[in-house]
Amino acid sequence: MESSSFHHTPYLMIGIILFFLLGSVAYGMYNSFGPGANGLKDSIDEHTRMHELGIAHTHWEN
Image (cartoon, rainbow, N blue to C red; front, side, top):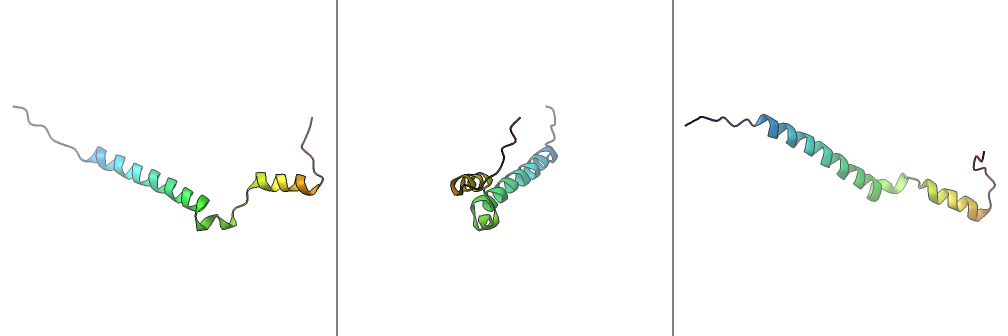
Protein backbone atom coordinates (compact mmCIF):
# COMPACT_ATOMS: atom_id res chain seq x y z
CA MET A 1 0.00 0.00 0.00
CA GLU A 2 1.33 3.40 -0.95
CA SER A 3 1.60 6.23 1.52
CA SER A 4 0.14 9.51 0.36
CA SER A 5 0.71 12.81 2.07
CA PHE A 6 -1.92 15.51 1.96
CA HIS A 7 -0.54 19.01 1.38
CA HIS A 8 -2.54 21.86 2.86
CA THR A 9 -0.52 24.61 1.18
CA PRO A 10 -2.43 24.80 -2.14
CA TYR A 11 -5.77 24.92 -0.32
CA LEU A 12 -4.49 27.60 2.01
CA MET A 13 -3.29 29.75 -0.90
CA ILE A 14 -6.59 29.32 -2.78
CA GLY A 15 -8.47 30.19 0.41
CA ILE A 16 -6.44 33.36 0.95
CA ILE A 17 -6.91 34.46 -2.67
CA LEU A 18 -10.67 33.82 -2.50
CA PHE A 19 -10.90 35.63 0.83
CA PHE A 20 -9.29 38.77 -0.60
CA LEU A 21 -11.25 38.55 -3.87
CA LEU A 22 -14.63 38.18 -2.16
CA GLY A 23 -13.66 40.78 0.44
CA SER A 24 -12.82 43.27 -2.31
CA VAL A 25 -16.11 42.61 -4.09
CA ALA A 26 -18.06 43.01 -0.85
CA TYR A 27 -16.21 46.25 -0.03
CA GLY A 28 -16.91 47.61 -3.51
CA MET A 29 -20.60 46.80 -3.23
CA TYR A 30 -20.73 48.40 0.22
CA ASN A 31 -19.14 51.60 -1.14
CA SER A 32 -21.40 51.60 -4.20
CA PHE A 33 -24.74 50.93 -2.56
CA GLY A 34 -24.24 51.40 1.18
CA PRO A 35 -23.70 54.48 3.33
CA GLY A 36 -20.34 55.08 1.65
CA ALA A 37 -22.12 55.93 -1.63
CA ASN A 38 -23.29 59.34 -0.41
CA GLY A 39 -20.25 61.15 -1.80
CA LEU A 40 -20.23 59.44 -5.21
CA LYS A 41 -21.43 61.22 -8.36
CA ASP A 42 -23.26 59.66 -11.28
CA SER A 43 -21.75 61.32 -14.33
CA ILE A 44 -24.57 60.14 -16.63
CA ASP A 45 -27.20 61.72 -14.37
CA GLU A 46 -25.22 64.96 -14.27
CA HIS A 47 -24.92 65.01 -18.05
CA THR A 48 -28.67 64.41 -18.42
CA ARG A 49 -29.36 67.19 -15.93
CA MET A 50 -27.20 69.58 -18.00
CA HIS A 51 -29.32 68.81 -21.06
CA GLU A 52 -32.55 69.28 -19.11
CA LEU A 53 -31.38 72.65 -17.79
CA GLY A 54 -30.24 73.75 -21.24
CA ILE A 55 -26.63 74.29 -20.23
CA ALA A 56 -24.47 74.59 -23.34
CA HIS A 57 -21.58 72.18 -23.75
CA THR A 58 -19.84 70.30 -26.56
CA HIS A 59 -19.85 66.62 -27.45
CA TRP A 60 -16.48 66.59 -29.28
CA GLU A 61 -17.86 65.96 -32.75
CA ASN A 62 -15.35 65.40 -35.56
